[in-house]
Length: 273
Image (tube, rainbow, N blue to C red; front, top):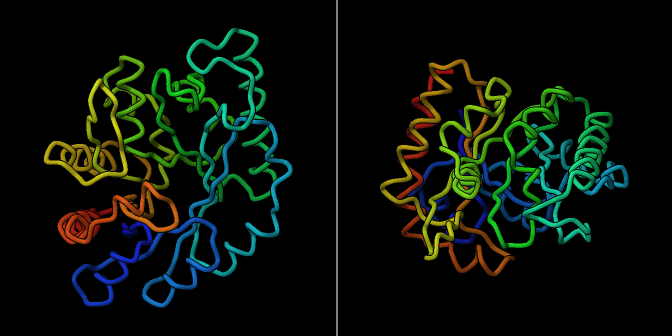
């Protein structure tokens, strides 16, 4: 399995001086960042597409196809996230029956539009984090039965973000391993991982350094891939660090990257798939 890390100046410096080894940098669909990263390693693009508004039919497919043609990006990822930031009028934490019907219609319209354009083999759906009271993601989108229904009915793949699953399971009062097992793991195509920190009052935050208690979650997932009939993902991405966004730039420590990456890279290369 290949290994990627978020593009950051700190990661670039560590790759350039030979302190860490990676297969890819992961970037948003930003041409200038891609050009900087490609000097050191190939780039896989992580798209900022949210399925759940019913508006993805309006996507600029030509731009997306250009990224697919000029980078080794294997999949177009969709965040399964009907989101209040997109102007949706629903209650995030207590959507009505009518709201849920509309949310499901939107999810089907959006995922269906991308699958129709690219084919199901090029599309992966990512589980997103949900926290009560945050006011962004609508609860319906993180229910494992909803994620499974959307993926199974469209024939696309799953991008499992382990930290996101742990956050959503905690919010829903579910065991995180059972939450993950309830997803269509046979369709697993890509894996994301970061540290998960409790910032107080039960607020779990991802995209942070890996803690001692986080490593067993990655090892458990790799065991599932190896021995439990889960899909065989092409890549693990460490979504720590970055550039161009205040949170990621502020949490982009060279020492963290130098500490965490060699262990993750070794786990990837030790996986027999």
